[in-house]
Image 1 (cartoon, rainbow, N blue to C red):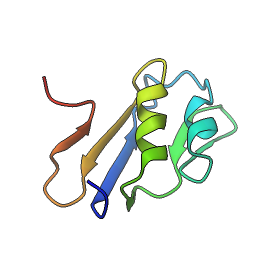
Image 2 (cartoon, helix red, strand yellow):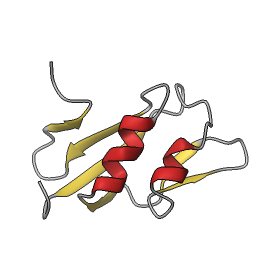
Image 3 (cartoon, rainbow, N blue to C red):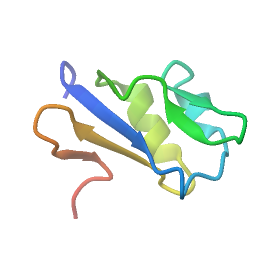
Image 4 (cartoon, rainbow, N blue to C red):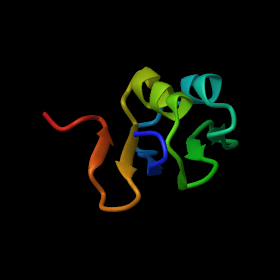
Length: 78
């Protein structure tokens, strides 16, 4: 897993602006003036903090896929 590149997306129609992602990964996410989350970089190195942010989102607005191939990282496929 580490060494991979991840593509991070936030579904802003789902995001409630809890800020949990910013707490988990302050270098990975920011909230805009409407308190909507945005990934700082749409593609970044795989990391525990990004995964924790996705897992910690109360409305599961964050999806992570492998940048190379698009396989889901979070949420995992059933």
